[in-house]
Image (cartoon, rainbow, N blue to C red; front, side, top):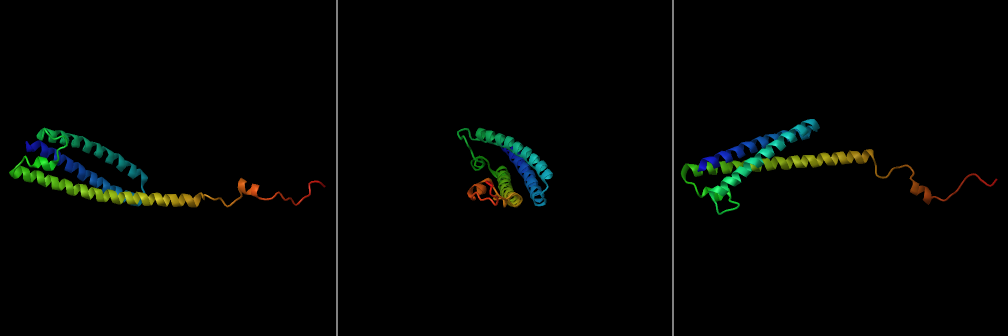
Length: 155
């Protein structure tokens, strides 16, 4: 009974470790500003996320089978069903998953900050290249000026 849950949790842990490695690589790519490598990493990241979602659906289904009355059973509630080595192994997997998710969140937060800084730099550079208030005359300024001429057109 614990074996299918153990396999699913182990799969989730491996996928999250792999996703963490992608996130670490993404940090380095963001620092370098390599857009092509970033694009490739994001595609790889998306496939990992899809795989995690599929395994997560399997986990939810299995937990509903283990606790039929619960619609959204937690892993902690399922652990109460097991004893001895099974429970210890599942708790170790739960702790590993929790730790991996915390590490992944930390790296993703860093990557988000790097992206925001990059966007600020790009925005600043664009503002410098294309100023909002051009220094030359505009149509509005011409209308405000009095209609004075050096030449007398009546002459």
